Image (cartoon, rainbow, N blue to C red; front, side, top):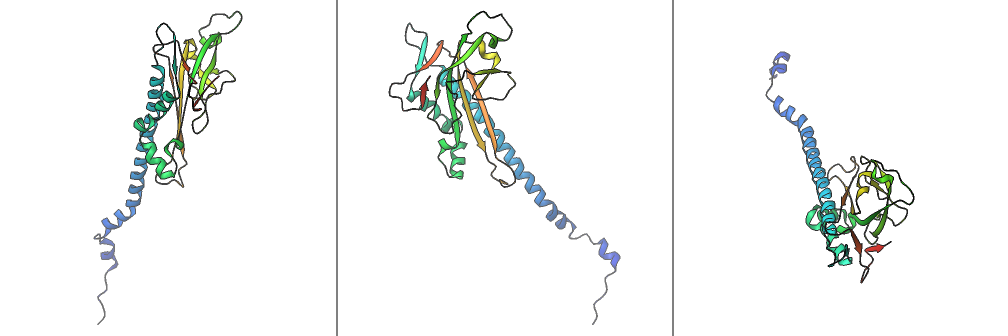
Length: 233
């Protein structure tokens, strides 16, 4: 017996499976948006943590107390290692991310610190609203034994740049040249998206903290029993 023919008009008016088809079409888009949102949140959180880490390490080093009757304080290799390991508390994501990348946590982030002294330039210098016009910045000591390089070298002297310039291991903002000295902490972390890593490139997060010594005119480095994490200039 021949089947009953279905009028074409009735077929076009049938909407029973339309919702399922629409859901199947839009689901991949919604899923991609959800994953993208997760990555944006992860990146934002990582950027905040890197900034917090730089400032936390700067605070720890800059709070060194000088001996009685002295104006300069010192830190040693143990102090620098303690400050470096603060990353495990302030930025625990670095451990999970390192495991995913198959490296040690300290190979997954670059943390460098240095002490900078500001001194008047030789000869006559006309007063200016720009504090860097009459002062120069010299590295007193720097971290040379940490992973990733990028430390502030002893020479040449640090170059003054506009405050809006991105952080660099060879430059300092002009506005901080008025201080007697500062502690500088540079932190660099490469954020790699968990999803879509073949399509979205890794993003470098670089943050720098500038801290004036709280109780001293300068934070120096004690090389006694130093293991190479820091070097005096």
